[in-house]
Image 1: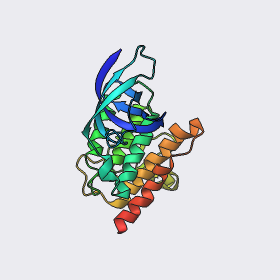
Image 2: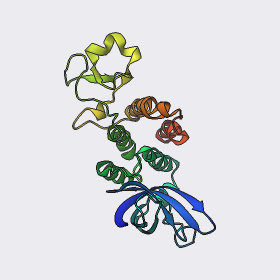
Image 3: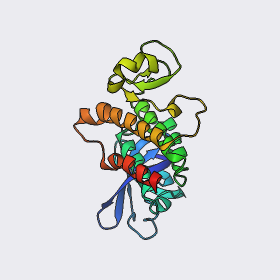
Length: 243
């Protein structure tokens, strides 16, 4: 069995003296593992870095086997991110959380969104807001999407500023006022078609929102904590914004 596909490298670990085992998020074949012969060589090490966009040709005798792959670099995102702690945290959070996707289950829309976010990692004024949307897209792909289009209580599409931490549905200002201390903030950039400039506080509210549902719907049921790299992301964003 053989296929060739675009992929984003999610994880790399050594195997034996010279090989590496990589975990790939492919466009049409989902999350896939592969053995890379010579993966620890000087030639391949720069390519086999998390977040890099590659072409992968995967081969195995049987489809359920690990298989082995040949990798060619399309675009490297890792080297630039290594120079900037905030970008590196964003890159690491994406590649870590994407490993929640079921193995070999295609998610072409999320693959495209992931590439889009990675393409802006060199612009800290843009990518953090895109990253919040990426986490919402991940929740949606895994069957835990939030309903942020209308108020859960009244059905209105206007003045939505809260989210129910239990249902993941939006709540309007008026309907949520009596319960506002128990509701999560819904930043305007997640509801407006053409939002004004996104502030750091709005991004932090967005990260608080998505972190709650990542923990409640994905990590707690597996008896796992939210990954450290994701826990640290808001603090790094605060330090970047105040620098």
